[in-house]
Every structure is written in structure tokens, then in C-alpha cells.
Image (cartoon, rainbow, N blue to C red):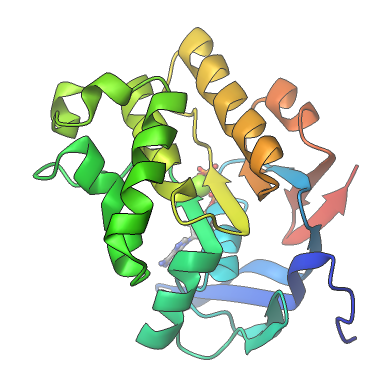
Length: 232
Ligand SMILES: Nc1ncnc2c1ncn2[C@@H]1O[C@H](COP(=O)(O)OP(=O)(O)OP(=O)(O)O)[C@@H](O)[C@H]1O
Ligand SMILES: [Mg+2]
């Protein structure tokens, strides 16, 4: 299967992944096929331990698969190849990632955390500083730019992490239970910001969530079960 559709920004073909656990082979993903269109959103639900984070890690090339192909737009990647540093640079521009636990650098200010994403992509710090400030403003944490993350609430930290994921104008955002550590109201606000900003900027989104309401807010919904993606 080749990908001639310019409208597809992220595609996986036959992704398989297993882990070796005390000498036993644990099959986590089996022949995952996935297509994400430009400006579209897909949610993935599934029981704890079914492989959702593993799948996002493979899509972002944070770890290699056992087999399968990935398409990042026109770029075709053998998913079993070890991710190289050149690719990390490219990924930083193409894919933004939001994690449940924020992963902000505690020694850096909020603005420096967001700019770290620009730094890693080797984009112009001067050109992107304005965008970083604007995104932080849009996320409602514009007044926290010079704070360090440990002084921020969980909701505020996740707003910063979303700004960091978006700052480079990535084509795709991968979000792994981004509201998993937040209370319902804060989680709802953060989720609205994520969904609305992706929609406004035309950024495609894959959202891993346990919350059926959030899952329904994406254009396409799926379940990961027994290593396979089932589309609803
Ligand atoms: N590096 C690893 N080595 C061995 N086993 C692993 C490794 N990473 C993940 N696993 C196993 O793979 C399975 C899938 O893990 P994964 O973190 O992808 O699940 P998940 O669907 O994201 O779960 P949750 O909803 O709890 O976040 C689990 O059984 C986990 O223990
Ligand atoms: Mg997970």
C-alpha cells in the first residue's frame, strides 16, 4: 500500500510491537493500520496496559517497532529502524507531543520551556519567541512566562506543555491522556483549549483518553483492544 494522498499527514501500516518480559514475549500491538488526515482528529481509548502509549511512542519514533511502515507526510520510515538524531530534529518540527505528566524542565522558566521546543528543531529563536508568548497568552498563562513550572498548578503546567507542543507549528499533535492528572473541571478547560487550538490552527490530533466525552469530541474514535485498533 503506498500513500499518494497528500491529505494524509500521518499513516501507519502493519505496526507490530512486543516486549520481552522475563523471557516471555508480550505482544502489545499487532498489525496496526492508521491514517490521519490533515486538520482531523482521532481519539484512542482502551484498557490500561493495552498499548496506547506504546502506539504513540512508535508513531512519534520515540522507540522502534518490530515491523511496519510509517508515513510522516511524504516521508516514509521503516518503523523497525532505530530512531536517529537527524530524525529527532525533523520530528520536533513535524510532531508535537503532550504527556499526562507534562514533562516540563523544572530549572527553566515557562517561556524557556516552550522555547526549548524551538531550540530542538533548530528554528529561529527570534522568529518564534513572539509565537511562544502569544500561545501562552491564548492558553491563559501569559502572566506566568517568567515563573518556573514547580510554582504552577497542574492545569497551568499542562497549558504550558500544550503551548510547547504547538509552538513550532507542527503538523500533528500526539496527546497521551493530557488531562489524566487534572480534576474534571480543569481537565475540561484544558481539553477544550487543546481541541480548539488544534482545530483553529489546522493541526491534526491523536488523543489518547479514558474519558468517553473527550473521545466523542474528536472526528474519529477508536478502541485499542488485543493489539488492534477498532474504529467506531
Ligand atoms: N519498555 C517496556 N518493557 C516491557 N514491557 C513494556 C514496556 N513498555 C510497555 N510495556 C508493557 O506493554 C503494555 C502496554 O503498555 P502501555 O504503556 O503502552 O499501555 P497503555 O495503554 O498506555 O496503559 P495506560 O492506560 O495505563 O497508560 C503493558 O503491559 C506494559 O507493561
Ligand atoms: Mg499510557
